[in-house]
Image (cartoon, rainbow over all chains, first blue to last red; front, side, top):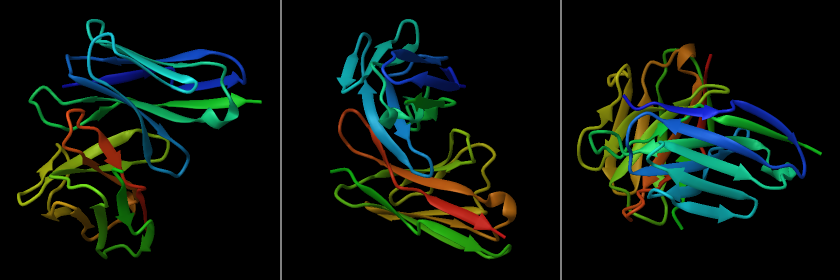
Length: 113
Length: 116
């Protein structure tokens, strides 16, 4: 069974600081996704990482993937209040090739002015 | 592009009634749609995978007779919660995947169900 763990679960940081969220998964997988969720809202797609060593950046967020270590990171640079949200990583497909995603526990990020 | 809508946005119903939630892909065709539920402050849990023209594949522990899924066309899937009870109260989110090589899932805005 594929398991996906995120660390930390909760994160409070000041504006302007940098931090990294980690996503570990238990078995080999082809794709790693990062999503953002605002309170009471659905998920917004941030990044899709398709291969070992993949790095993608959008604004103050940068995601990377190390398939050998089964680890993805989401790095936040010079955080601003607007980045406050819950961030989920998700892995797919599963071991049987099904498209379904397995989600991490989520990281609730609060940026303090 | 890749917009997914859900209807209704929220619904409050009495215990024992049935509730239907619609999920539509507005600007693309989706052969596969997914239904998730999310309890407060928790992650998303996949309930079932919905394939156009065939029966849905349910995850372990999800009652197929209680959560009826119909995927009648390439742009519409419906989830019917039958004989709803308070423990079915949750945030239900659908997603649809594009047919490109990333298989990115695009999520609907969610439906908040409250069963009294």
